[in-house]
Image (tube, rainbow, N blue to C red):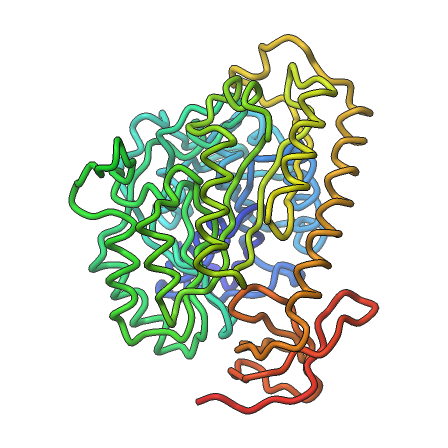
Length: 440
């Protein structure tokens, strides 16, 4: 087969997907393919899909249409979580040539070769998810300021609303040695900040549960990883993308609080402030543990930013249950929310539960928490006014502090690190900085 001239990529979903898309793109480039932007004509389009929301199907179909509108004769390949969950459904989308599952997507080049010998469209290569047991490392490229580094994949938890274990398989991790080598490679590209990503990041090493004050030690755990990264003279700042509250141990919190490299920013999913609903979700903690984690972070890092994932409208969630969540979050010392409206996902236990919440009620609850989030975020920003922070700037004079405050600085140099004094909030909700000193 003659190598196609060009290949374009489009990513839907999480930071982990972005890191994997970059890894796949690097595979193509090593074989001599020419990558172009998704908005340009191409010989091959690769779509990396997500399954978290109920818009996965619509977004996938729309991306396929856009690709073929630009290049009617192009080959269209769909990979990712949605491709693993519903390969046959995707293969029947007009214009899709190849669908690859969770394991097969990393052998995409071999399947591209096979595609030329396949008559007709809609070829499917997606094995059983229980057979997926290897870890493929990757990190995002194209943004010198920030890189998403994949260190863990899959999940052994059985949350009743979640399809991720069905789409990505069991929990598995990179080795610390491999992570450190990736950090070295990333540093050579001039990147300032690394965001550690995974499906269940705190389960790195698949042995991080703390039981009665002791930890089950395997080859390495998340605390071991961050301790080794701290020693590495690689990048100026590290950030944890998201970590389960039961895995955000005192040991992890205490270490990060003393680190000069790890950002004072925690994103911990709560999902519900009702213990009844948490039990129905089969979450591995209760609200009391979550509150203790928040208190621990704020006691050691008063300036830390804490973000929270919440699901509204879970089956059986009464108005009283929702108000319990609302008031719990209102009183909790957290700083912003990511609010998700529950949607029924096929093959999940939650989809079979009774007590379905009408969609209009789900949306009303989402709006209430969204407004609460805006108030929490503004209060957090206002507390930062007058402080001096370190900002890594991106294009457009905008960057983020170590505690995740979005800052505007006139005349800022892209990919620079500056010490800035946070002066005031502007009408767009950005923190404006008045003076700065370039940091080496």
